[in-house]
Length: 294
Image (tube, rainbow, N blue to C red; front, side, top):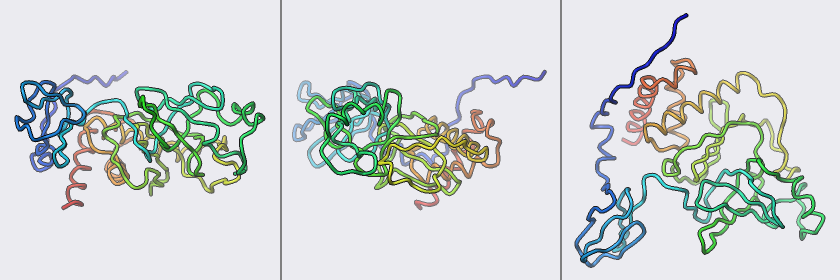
């Protein structure tokens, strides 16, 4: 019986034309001196010592006028108002759900911040509070939007739009939040036959594109119909493509994911997880992105 044995090897450096954009960034490590000019203001990820502005985290230096801060390359999700997140219900409490969203603290989804089944617009009653587990229970995955940020950094979510709510059948992929590119929309129906939700918190949800949206369920209806084999294959290939892009630190957005999917069609789904195949399809994806931007 043949076995596929693989040995670790040093990764080859990408051509300079494809990484010139990354090399132009000012990257620092903890303790590095950012500037000795006392005219700058200290922002997040920095501290002052002997009239020098120094980095407290490893990341990229960002300047906004006279304000200097360091954006960490790898960190927990720091949510902002309007961010799209994918999370998992961890606890049902009085008039609220606790949601795990890859941030430092569990997020909060209030009963008053969700759509009632059928889209009813009324005050929440004690009957709604008793029926909270009929809407969402522990372990359910949801998509939501950040409504506000509490003083301690915890996030308050809402699902008042019909595009948010409980998620049904699909695959969850976790990547670094810094790899998800901020766009106007994070819900994409890809041409390959599947849909994707790129959560700002690093949780990516891949699911078969629904034939029609049931608006009467208020975001709580989930289909339990069997997913066809062709859709499962597309979802599996998309999952491997996202893992490949994440491993090579490529920003995730609809164009990069679709280009990577098209580059992987020359290989079998199981082969797209091999390091040399991952590098090949990511290099081709980078080349196409550079050509598009150029």
